[in-house]
Image (tube, rainbow, N blue to C red; front, side, top):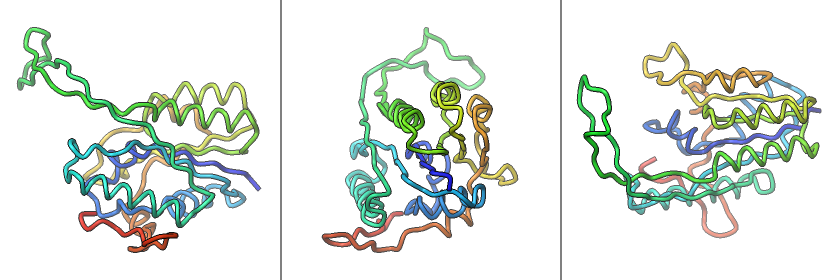
Length: 230
């Protein structure tokens, strides 16, 4: 058996693949274990899934408080359905005032034409994924780690895992649409793909549709329910 740990960059998955789709109520075990990892390695045994995110800021979210509640319901559903298998690791967001170049068609950005803006930044997710994956690899907690991200910030961690734990296989799942999908945006990050033993370059709509949680997931308290706007 190949002991396998999965690390998911929640916001990278959301903004790169799930936003604007009806597939946000995603069963990450059904998708990543059953439809990606096991077809790649039938001998894989899932020992953990670590899901990295940060609390939604209602003041910045499209649906305000409803977006906060949607995230709360989703994380409750994951924890309840896969108690002991899924760990949710949270960072945080910060707002900072800054100045950025104003957009002008057919004109390059210029420091001579800037506007004051609020910058929102997610903190700790990248470093949390890197440290958790590296620690699990060097401590011998897994034989294979699978990372879902297309963020180049992951490249140093993958390189160091290859150097310090060469026996651990690295799988990479890119949260992108298939190349033949007219709605496809973004390209595989070559800094990451060159560090992986195997790469899944896309997530198909049918896979996402078949990997949805039940509308209501039983918990120790009241059920966690799929948000109406999802």
